[in-house]
Length: 360
Image 1 (cartoon, rainbow, N blue to C red):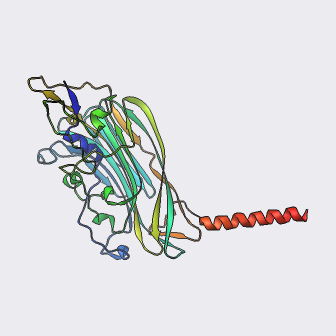
Image 2 (image 1 turned 45 degrees about the horizontal axis):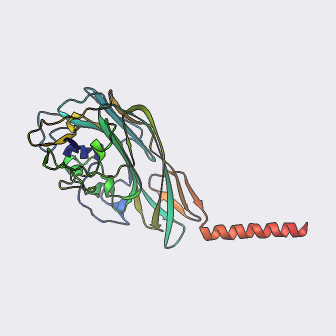
Image 3 (image 1 turned 90 degrees about the horizontal axis):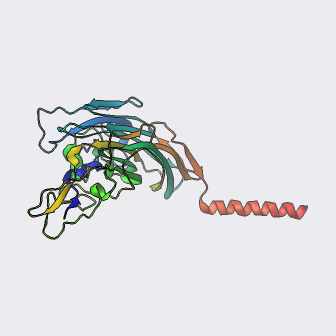
């Protein structure tokens, strides 16, 4: 009897590209933009591949890496059989990854697009609630390779460079190029996986089991927040199986409870990646059995084309509130009356209508 078992390396799909940690948290809430040269807003675009020996780096392997901190200027790499790119503007994340084949020395390749902006909301007292809308659009071809997409819009009370990931892999794979989105207070998130197997549980199942007497070649990691090695299997919003031209058109909405007059950072990150055959699933097998293989259902290249997304399309604040962004960008901010004020307005309109009918 042979049953698919998730390998350790599959957990790296969530680490779609270098969403990289920096130093320990330092709370300078309220005076963030005045701290020793830390920018109050920024964009970063990263395209990179990751060598298979990421725990014990091989000095002979030189990874491909391109980084752009200029808004609208793309970072891009091209390896043997794979490409990746990303570009970023304030309010817009754009990432791309495609591979038809990945060399044995490379685990995977991807693009990461991130931006942040310091914001203060005034015009009221106490607390209020802001509503956010993000449009996530792209096209996915699922071929013979696995891949993943991760998007997060979130907030932080500390500067993004001071965030530290709770995932071991982010800190292991990382140089301090960017910030870990899992350390933010999330407003809206989305995780998408691509599997070259029609049976999505081959790569994305969370509770694989061994048959009686079976020996798993690599134990599965079932902890969704990190597992024994700080890697794990999150709950994916969507897992795509083999097929070309699969459209992803998702409207993400979320809310944020804020305190008037207190500054915070708004962050957005989008990462996509394609991973190589080093992430082939292993099997459990009975003693004496020949180790099994699992045939792929997909053929050809796997591509994540999110070059035009994700976009923050709107922020709605309570009536009378106004948001001040360090960058000067407006992010399509609008204000609406509080629910109690809506009721008062409707009552007033009803009274006007009653008077008009009475006069006639």
